[in-house]
Image 1 (cartoon, rainbow, N blue to C red):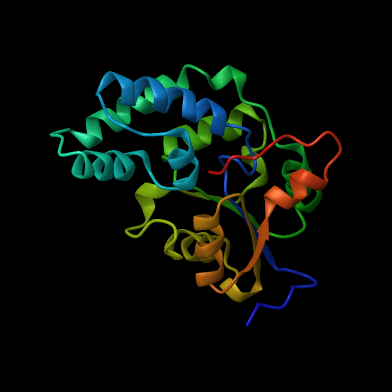
Image 2: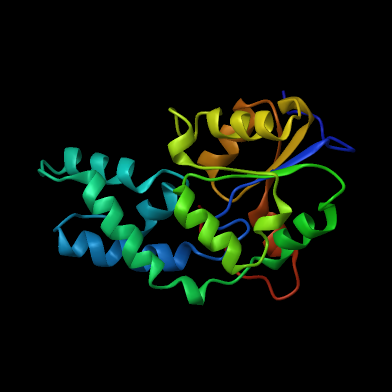
Length: 205
């Protein structure tokens, strides 16, 4: 049974990549370079289907599937450094950032991202919105990643709001599954972006 819509959520939680920040094409550019460098097969459609999964986990999966010996932690750092070179190109997804700005100071808010703490904070600072959020929860802070609910439950805990009283925003099917598993109201930002004036396509994250 679908979770009823909260008329007045007590907390808001946002994914970052593809939700607050238009970063997914930039992530794909970095992934394409790295997977070519290491001879890994990683088509673009699969990249988008794995939106929200940490880079280290994706690399471990690809290496196992393709019978490759790979230091997935080291290569994940290499991918992050390649992506960081594009930081100046990152733009906000206005339809979602506007929601966060409208609620700032009224109810507690958090970011729940499969990215790393260093990079997500840099992205939020680049967009000048880090101050809007009471907490930023990233992949290093939980054991089980999306579509497990852990990262959203931890975000709710850090802002002091019961999960069932939170509304959360995501742009991937994996992320939306995680939100619903946490017992929160889920908002698919792909629909918000589509309805916005001059919408930008969202590719997941």
